[in-house]
Length: 353
Ligand code: IPM
Ligand code: MN
Image 1 (tube, helix red, strand yellow):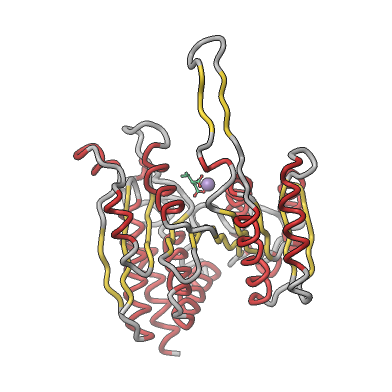
Image 2 (cartoon, rainbow, N blue to C red; image 1 turned 60 degrees about the horizontal axis):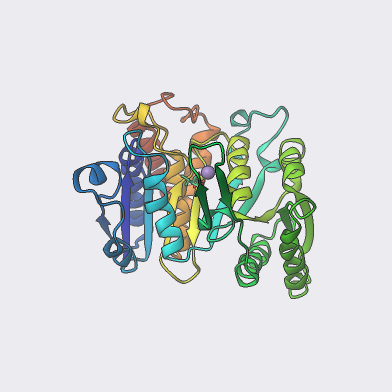
């Protein structure tokens, strides 16, 4: 019996998570696995009521689960970034979820803003390092609001941290059996300490003779992702760079309405989330697109070892999008619950056939 922690969070989080859980329930029933849910209240409402963001007890509670499903965090009533840092980054760092797995796959041609790009041309996965880089919080502000103000933010990479994420990339490239290539995205020309990434990639690559390596500076990688997205298979990169290029990647596959991620520590409790934010202006209106959260559920089911289930969800998403039963991934294109219902019926239809 798997146990799953649910953190709906803020804004549209609750609405999209509801649809994600509907899909989870369907796929579990169809393929016959069992799970237990426990919902946690952390987010803006909870903070405004209690003054608590994400206490140590919450982090400890997360460890009693096999996986965590997160909706969205962020609320205009709360200081910028405070809840995001406490909850999203609190879980990533607190549980040492060093892989941020962000698949970028186009399921239907009309969803891609690029001309002449077909689904077979966009199937890559970005592995974003998730526990180091600019996100470690090493730095600060001195002489704030004076003419002598100084702001410092250090990007931190360790040999061990770099090696483990790069190793994961090679393992995944082998498993994917696509182009058998790992592309390192860095900025080692201008930021020389990033040479650690270059050397680590070269060293780890020797253990994976069937995988070729490739390299692109982050600025060029942005260009290539638009110009020749079909060149990418498995990409590994730093935390901040990965954050940025996966929003670009999200657009390649149809937008934030579909992009999802897994925050993973192999073999330990891991967290799955849509990569979009809480979109407060759509809260409670049944307008948000739930496909990104359903895509996160797909990743979670796969992580839990239910590969038949994750395949069903993926086929259902692909089916609903390519037939235009879900015609668009934009907010307001169709009611949130109806989009969830469509995926549910696709799963049931597939299970019968
Ligand atoms: C993401 C988000 C987060 C990040 C924010 C909300 C802290 O943009 O998951 O991509 O920067 O990692
Ligand atoms: Mn982001």
